[in-house]
Length: 65
Ligand code: FES
Image 1: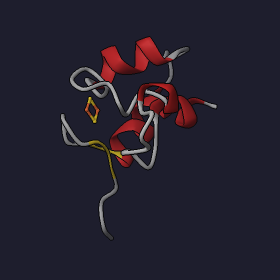
Image 2 (image 1 turned 60 degrees about the horizontal axis):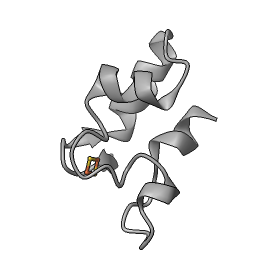
Image 3 (image 1 turned 90 degrees about the vertical axis):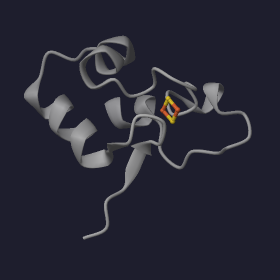
Image 4 (image 1 turned 120 degrees about the horizontal axis):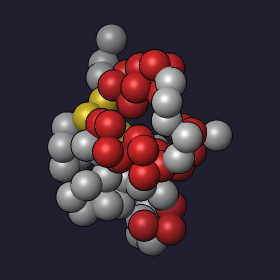
């Protein structure tokens, strides 16, 4: 199966993000960034607001809902 990369800068996959959320203890996007390292470089993968030109397909805030 092809791996979907959510955070291009840190090379963090959708699977990595979802398993971090599944493990629990992540209440908000800041906790998710801290736990996975995603969103800590260009920040575009954090939310659509951080990505005004739509350069990322998936954002951390959308995965937390
Ligand atoms: S794509 Fe996630 S910090 Fe750049």
